[in-house]
Length: 237
Image (spheres, rainbow, N blue to C red):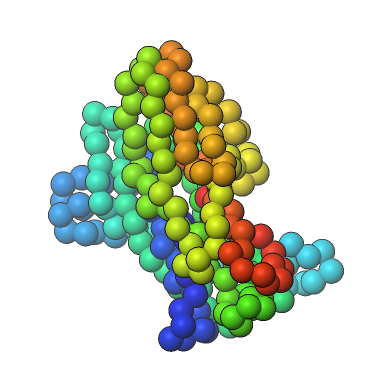
């Protein structure tokens, strides 16, 4: 998930989401028809925005900002997963600019064949900070990764996977494992790999680990490429 603030109209942010989940346990799933027709499925739930300030009444309740429907892009019956994507906008008028907001959606489930945390719930989230940057007066945009949803590795063979990252503002991007609070999954979901946080490279040492493993609870954090006041850290899971 990533959110980008437009130069044309600074009154909203455009958020893009990519989802993958269990076909069997979900009440909806992708098939040839939904994929070829670009059908919208998974709708009816909400992306929520929350802020954390015990002294502000505005932060006492979550705000519903978008529906959770997505368009099917791929699926596998044998491996039991559906995959899709969608976009939605967040209007600045709907959230106060003096807070950092967490936009999130949590549901169930990861596929049953995972070696660790099978059938567990998942969480997608990002933070929105509407404070303008001091170097250019613009609102900071999220770092982005266009990583494939699935990597296939040969057991016993050492391999390295570079996570493709970029930042619309030209800032330096680093990677780390997300915490359980940030992703609903502990950071030990892939014990056979070591994450090079500086270079965003996941190194697999070839240890025995046959089966499906969850490596998607990674967090991208950016550091400024120029000198400016960084009011809050912005991340994307």
